[in-house]
Figure 1 (cartoon, rainbow, N blue to C red):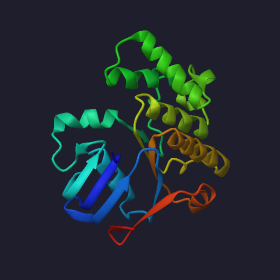
Figure 2 (figure 1 turned 90 degrees about the horizontal axis):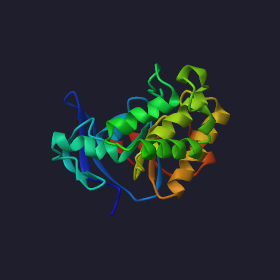
Figure 3 (figure 1 turned 90 degrees about the vertical axis):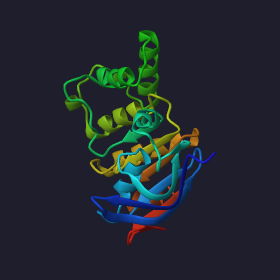
Figure 4 (figure 1 turned 45 degrees about the horizontal axis):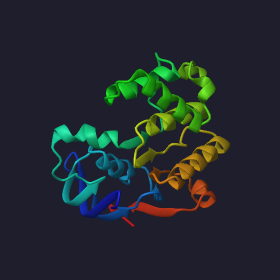
Length: 218
């Protein structure tokens, strides 16, 4: 089953058409770049995938959830199956790395303390940050913070990761490491959609490219 399936979708924000006639499928383990100018609709498209921005018409499903007719009470269940990587990290600044990750597990219904500790260790190890669990976010570099954000996105073993400009605040070498890591995650079977302005990264790590332009996706 396709992870994302959009057919002739229209997306509005504040009653203005942002994108129209969007048709898109993304398969398990696929890595897809989303490119386009600021304001071209990249973020709106990604936000529609986790029901932050409504789909106004067409057919749209993500992970089997019908986004056109999705009851509000179902939205948290959809979001638990999606990992989101933000440009500005959005870590809780008053908590350690470990506490940031535990907060997500608490919020998504994990109960067993040993299971939680094991899962936090697993994701930190996966991003090479196991020795930083006691640190506060401000004690980490931008690249380290973004690795923690990726670890956070992996906690609930998502089938889909949405990365919105994940290298936007990073130096080029660190940005390359982050994209290489996301490509590795896709290689393990998780679909990854990454919005970026950085065409150099697109050339360096070739994958399928979708462009938002003129209110359409091509």
